[in-house]
Image (cartoon, rainbow, N blue to C red; front, top):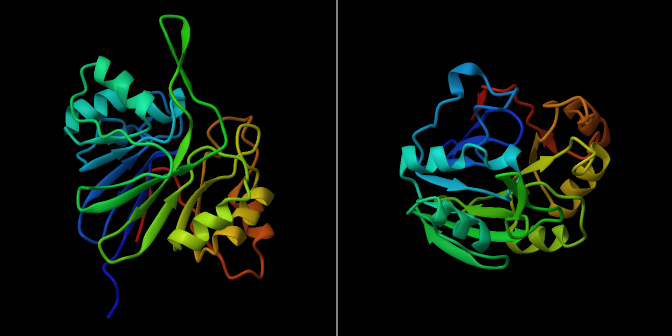
Length: 235
């Protein structure tokens, strides 16, 4: 029998809503109101069951407090970011750190490494928000997805592939602040993927990497590039 569908909605940049086979809705890296790629109809906080935040940059969490309050969903993020959220009055936080796993909303969430930086400007000051991270989510049907967050290519992606065997990975391809398409193609190889969802591209002119370039680098590998338009949902 076919496994129940996993549905992936892209709200632009690195913001996604993933509906799991068990019907849980996971919001990744909520940036809506100020996100130029996010369709107008999708800028209000969605109803979700779980919020995962990779790091503390504005383009990944500017709408986090709002989304957490509106949905009441637990927020999973690194310890320091959760501490900051608690000070903002967000009650439902589920802090963790790299290498750790937790069972939440009927899913198993593991926090992985990511190579990047993490800080948020508040009252004119840059605040340290802990280290950047990625997530592996094991779904109800046993499949795993890997959300890399913002990162460069790093050799331990091979370990993430070996240990968690993700079927699908969400990888940044924009260049400048993250991997470019060539590096993302190498990441696909290290991870042993069947499908890749490119993210963190097209939002600003500085982000020059495109899904077309990624497809060129992946030609002949059998890895499927799931190219979405902002506002689009794929099953």
